[in-house]
Amino acid sequence: MRRTLKIPLILIAALGCLAVVALWWVAIGHASAIGSSARWLVRSHDYKAEVLAQPGSANGELKHVEWDGWGWAGQDTVVYVVFDPRDSLSQAAISHQPGKYDGIPCEVFLVRRLESHWYTVRFYTNSDWQTNC
Image (cartoon, rainbow, N blue to C red; front, side, top):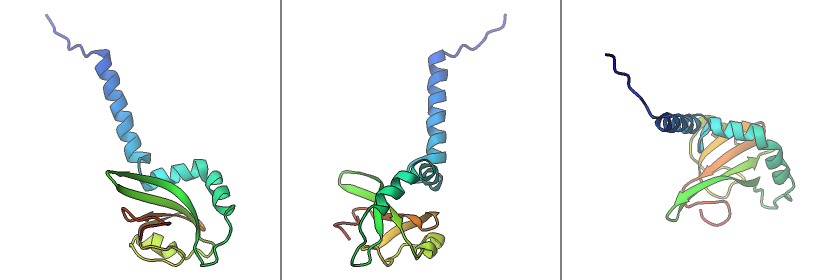
């Protein structure tokens, strides 16, 4: 007599959901380059309209809007979408080196290029554009 292994349908469904979540996390998950590209592809029009509607800054600050943020227990990290009309952030995006860049008030951890003139700028934890450098 042959025995067959019976796996409950609920277990198969749970494993399937877990696999989908894991693939999402790897492919387009939190703060990944692929995730940023996918999000930009879908929502760039909205972000561009919001950023470009801002008045110009007298002190040379680049136009920006919050793109992403996460944290826990008072340890917050913020990422901004930044419009850089001179593409002065292009070298920072290529080098992936932290630094202080013109038009941004604080040193930043990471700059990524979304498309010409458009970047994401990730601040160090507990730093943001407005208040903490």
